[in-house]
Image 1: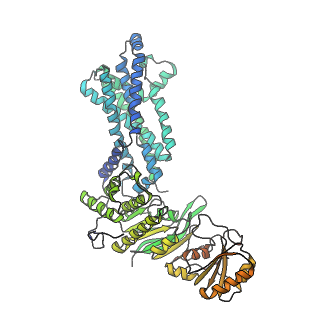
Image 2: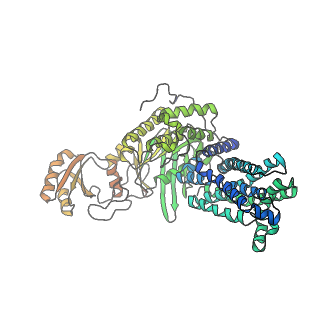
Image 3: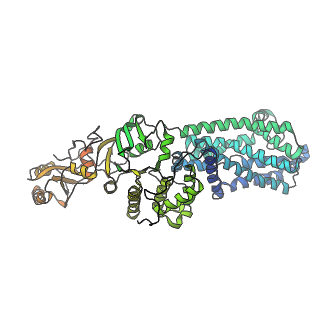
Length: 272
Length: 348
């Protein structure tokens, strides 16, 4: 192979000096790569949108009249937070992270001066963008179904952001599993966590209608308070207590899930 | 000359097994060092320790003047690495991957554009650089991997089996790129390989590793000289002690060994010994399928030191029916010539 004559690769050329890029550059670089991959893998995004739309249409169609007659509930408004939680819960780049680990690309990143924390936070930043993007069409669907937000446009924005923050905190679990195991099967099975969190709560009926063991479980399930906060934005107007409890529930869950993810990251990047 | 890479009794243990067992190296700046050994010999483990991915269990190592354990962050700024399997992301384009790599090394926009163009001209990926990496051939992936290792202008490049799995044309292209990097830019290159020809073609010095231990080190010609002069290889139907004994009595024969159905005869005057050896084989009654005369290769060095061929994934059964020999020379000195031969296949 002959090198071009004008190629400045010889010993006398101007050299560049590798140096740490800084936390923000590292974070944005990792996040940009992850965001760019999202539209390239529509198969990982489309189900996250179709499933909540399907269940929202199904549940509203099947249960609206019953719930309205039995408890006077506007089921379209009651179920919209459930639909958005379905859309944003469990959506993450954890599978892509496992692919990086198994394919050796994670090692390549590890041999750069990148801040190790940004290898996780960059992916989570991309996840936040994605879950917000997923929440918007679900809200639009609700509006098309005739749902009226008691808190107006500002409430809708808070609704989307609150949902996005919840979706973000949940990603800590699949990331913890991905980083700990490096196994795609284990990451896929993390979806099982979705079911108890989203169904052992006020998914279909209000809290006061729950009884027995389900009421007890729902009391400790953070989703109960998250749904209550989101529902308050749709149905009740600005309710500081409901929103505060929702934020506290998200924060409590986030402390747990992010602690697990950070511990797993520490284990993964530690040279053994 | 300053040392680019130094290891002192470096070792890495997995369970009870030492994957790398007390290796001492001193590699000068601007040198191409070939680290030669079969699969599982410990080559990649050593590379991963030097690249700060693995912590040594014992010993010490410095790369570009920095201790790999105490200052891994400084080592990372000075090295470029292409690991055994091209560590790429199939979902990015080649250009995106190189740009991200350059960003993470702190290069500003102007530097990134310049360096990406430079390394692209070096590895010659062509228009495919704007395609997703998943569409690349194995050879293109290897070359992109090399480009990614170079984009931040490192002083030392580690290439872990850079041509494994490549077709001959792609392999030759990678060799040319390695030579250019070293000759034109003075980059120190630590190259692991299981291909004798690769080490012979590229490396200024070769270290031979077997079962975690460095068993020989030196210039390829020095190593080859160390096993004698000419080699006569006879492929025979049946290797027996009678045949070997007959060959040992042939005038001009310095040594006789056997491996994988081949009889290996060492002689200071191979051309002169050829006819008597052929006659001795004929008289012994064995069927000879081929008889060739050649100069020693690094495989002969490896065979003499370890009792097995280098280019075999598993230790082959020896021609005399004996089990494969364990490392012949554990603890062989790293700085000098090859360790003394003790294998039965070695010249007797």
